[in-house]
Every structure is written in structure tokens, then in C-alpha cells.
Amino acid sequence: MSDAPFSTIVEPFRIHSVEPLVMTTRQQRRGHLRAASYNLFQLRAEHVLIDLLTDSGTGAMSRDQWAAIQHGDESYAGSPSYYLFVDAVRELFPFEHVIPVHQGRAAERILFTALGGPGLIVPNNTHFDTTRANVEASGARAVDLVIAEGRDPLNEHPFKGNMDLEALEALLAEHADSVPCVMVTITNNSGGGQPVSLANLRGVREVCDRYGKPLFLDACRFAENAWFIREREDGQGERDVADIVRDMSALADGMTMSAKKDPMGNIGGWLAMRDDDLAQTCRTQLILTEGFSTYGGLAGRDLEALAQGLKEVVQHDYLRYRIRSTAYLGEALQKMGIPVLRPIGGHAVYIDARGLAPQIDPLQYPGQAVAVALYEVGGIRSCEIGTVMFGRQPDGSEVAPSMDLVRLAIPRRTYTQSHIDYVIEVCERVAAGAASLPGYRITAEPPSLRHFTATIQALD
Ligand code: F0G
Image: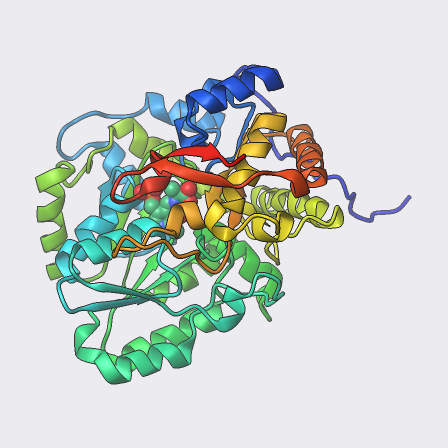
């Protein structure tokens, strides 16, 4: 009999404790949409059947993580849970200083309070929104320097998250004195969950060395990035993912981290670095707003869950399943002719809503139209990443960004293949009716970050 691998993706776990999902009718969902003013962030989560709003903090913890929670030590200072956490982080990211925080944006705020400032420039492949907001809150300018292929939704480049090394060199040649650090986001969430290669990271390191600049990783999805390196980069195919992660961290001087993604936490994060003086400044900031340096706003039990999650996320069976199952959804949509960002990223599938509903002017929010339809038709919550999110300019004008996307983010270890098959079927039905979807208009919005709270209405 053949030894060929089977094509069915088997979840490398079985279910130990279940959460009920509530079924709703289309009629009820129409009412929930009205009550939420057509803003999916305003829905009550129990009215959502499949929640693909984000992969952040929404994963299922393992039996061993729940067991670790019982082991949590809640001492204010010097908790053994902190030391366990630091050891688990250093196993993959051997930085001298590891500072726990409650989530990624807290690490960003502390880092840019220390390193940012008016007139400074921070280059990144692509800043995530909170990273950009924290750089800008310090008075500095956030500049995105992803390679050109990374801005083209259909280009099949294997490492679309790579930094444009020439652009980085040019920026540093002109403004070296104004650049406090260089950042690289792995994987590049805002660019479609696309990975950065080891070769590119080495290139960034060389440029940083020439100009004497520290390199920080925004490493939320480091394990997914390392798996893509193993699958796609020359000479990496036989390596242990944990070793690839250590290679990535060896090239950097520090990192910010949201542990709500790959470290399998429902909450948590950290900031890490080699530099003693910077660490001291950051710890002072930490104590000001987050907590003492051995808990940083987390409970001891959270630190234990993260220490265990870090061991689980680098397991090959898990990562093979994770990356294949995201691709399974993306490839099925593509086969049905739904335009999706290519190649399929690690944590999410991004539908090109402008391509799917070309009759809707970008300033009438095609992404919102598709996201609302996915909820109304099938109870699926997704996230508009387009003109609603980015359209409002600081001068008050409204400009459509280059793409109107709908992100279907996949929580880790949470949904089974039949849930995803259902998502595929709902997408097929929405795509079949996409030509008659209406545009939308915003009826009220706050001065910034409007996508969370704006009230929205369908155009007749
Ligand atoms: N960096 C990246 C690349 C992220 O994707 C996120 C969060 C953060 C930083 C901030 O981390 O939420 O723990 O404060 N991304 C979530 C998402 C919110 O839905 O993509 P946080």
C-alpha cells in the first residue's frame, strides 16, 4: 500500500472542552445589524456564528496551558511564573532583557516613548496601525518600505513582506541622524500576513550595521513566518522551526510582541532588547503605567500560559496544519473566482472587495458592503480593511487607500474544517449576489480610529 501523504488536513488536536455557538436566522441578523448601525465591531459576539474579526487573543488554549494556569504564582514581585516566562521567551529570543506587558501596543508605546520624538523617522516594512499610531504619538514619522511586490495583490513573490533594502539604504543615507531604529514586522499583517525571508533580514541587519542603527522585530506571528521560511527559502527545508526563530532573533537587537497571536495567549505581550540603558528607561515607563517589571500588567497565571504556548507554537505538526488550513480557505475562494490577495498569508485570507463588487465606488465602502453581507447571509464576522478604516485623512478629507480588503482572520485551533467549509459556502453565496450589493455611507464618526465606532447606513 502507498505511503503517500494524505490530502485531508487533520487538526493535530482533539476537542477537550466545547463552547456553544448560537444559531441565528437571517431575519434576526438583519435586526442585529440595524442595532449595531452596520458596524461589525458593535455586534454582540454571541450573535456571531463564526468570528473571523481577528486572530488576536481569540485562539483556543491547550490542556497544558490550562494546567499551567493553575500553577500561576501571583506574587507582586519576583514571581516564579515570571522566571518561567522569561526562560520560555529566551529559548527562542535570547535577549538580555524581557519586559512583560499586557499586549503588543503597550510594548510599542513604551519603546517609542523611549526612542521616538518629534522630527525622527522610523522605517518598517509595514507598520501595523497601533505601531504607526505609537510612533506618531511620539512625534516621529512612520515610513513603510515594503518591496514593490508586497503592494501588488496578485504578485506571487514568496516573501512579500520583505523590506526594500535599497529604499532603506536611501532613507538612511539621507536621514541617518533622524532614525532611532529600524523595525521589521513578521509576518507583515497589514500587507496580507506575508513573510519576510532570512536573507532579507540579514540584508536589513547589514544596512543597520553600516549606519549603527538597532533593529527591532514586531514578532507577533514569528512562528508562522519561520514556517514559511522553512517551506520557501533555499536551504531551510530540513530545519527545526525553533532554530529558524533563533536565527531571526540573532539578527535583531530587540523586539515588540503581542502574545495574543503566535504565543497562544488570550492576553499578553513583551518588549525585549539587548541594550541595558534602553531597558532601564523602558522598565521605568512600564512601572508608570503597566505594573512592576516582573508582571507588567499580567497575572502570574497569564505568564505561565504564555510560557507553555511558546513551546506549542513551534511544533511542526501544528504549523503545518495552521498554514495549510489558512491556504485551504483561500484556495477554495480563489477556485470559485473570488479575488483574494495572493499568496495566501499565514493567519488570514484577504478578499479584494473592490474586485468582487466593482459597482461600488471606493468612497461608498465596498469592503463594508461585503463584510455586512457575510454577516447577514451566514453570521460570519470579518474585518473591513479599506476605506472605512483608512479613508479619513488628518486634514478631514476622505481618500480611498490603494485596496479595499475584507480580512477573514483565523483564530488558532478554534474552528474545525467543517466550520471553514461553511465559511466557503457563505462566501460563494455572497459572491453570487455581489453585483447587487449596495454602497454605504458613514452617518457619524469620531475624530480618529473611526472604524471601531462609526455608525453606517446602506445607500438605497
Ligand atoms: N503588531 C502587529 C503586526 C499586529 O498584528 C498587532 C495586532 C499589534 C502589533 C498590536 O498588538 O493588539 O496585542 O496590542 N493585531 C490585531 C489584528 C489587533 O487584528 O491584526 P495588540
